[in-house]
Image 1 (tube, one colour):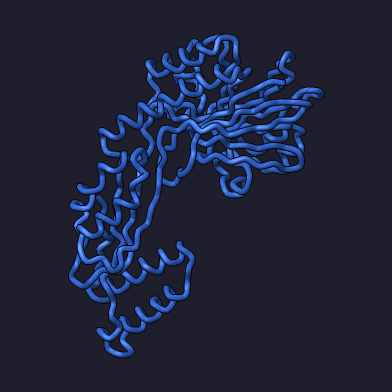
Image 2 (cartoon, one colour):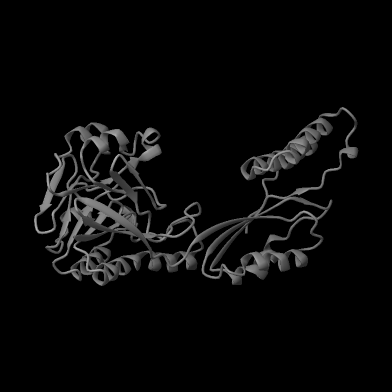
Length: 375
């Protein structure tokens, strides 16, 4: 039996999503600290291989100091092998800092343009990989993947678009599932998408670890790495969370609220368990006529409850259909949308209808649209 850790999309040197300066500096440190966490876990679990499936760096933030830091961390693994393929954010260009850097002996970067296969006889594992270079890897490269080695667990290390995304991402190395399955490999260690996922098809296991630290809104939930084990020619994996924080998106219907003070007390309940998180909170629903939310007041009273708060106003003024002349465009428009809102439970559809009602009535009344505030 052999063990490996599979990680990807660390984006070392970046701070992730656009954030205020002080918050961004702290997130940059936390993202960079994901690497020693991974190395500590590799030592704790006594893994044989560390697989890095692309975007170890974000190229514009790659400095000599960062390269030395990463090299030191990889060196802590001693004789445990570190195998890296470069991704679209850190392509292995001829003059790329990572290409010329004197890496520790246990570190191997797969080159762009052609496959390389490494066989670890004592482990019974063979790993094939290819990096991004001046141009994205082309789909025809899949026809050139090295033949699987009989008696070995065969792993491919790739940064690209597999699963459903293979049909949608022509510029991001599409990896059609049927082509991967036909290769006879047991495990595809993938990178590129920042949320973890795994699936099995016809005895072949595919996995994205996602970024070990979330990098933006839309990357909700747990973040970490896959721990893999090989046995009897097969691979099994388990997910190990490592992320220090989570991005969380919340929506709150404020219909019926009469004041910001009342709203603050309600929102405190929503944020009670989110002290370590980056929270995007969108306020929706109808407000009494003439009442406009004071986002600065709300944020001042709520932001200490979480690590970071992004507050958005998507509310609209209450609509009374009797205000509009019978048969007028505003009356027909608001009546139609109000009926649709009353008959749909789908949250995404409701969000679209709410925005259409708000902006549509505003455009019909004033000829302009206020897109709402953010704090």
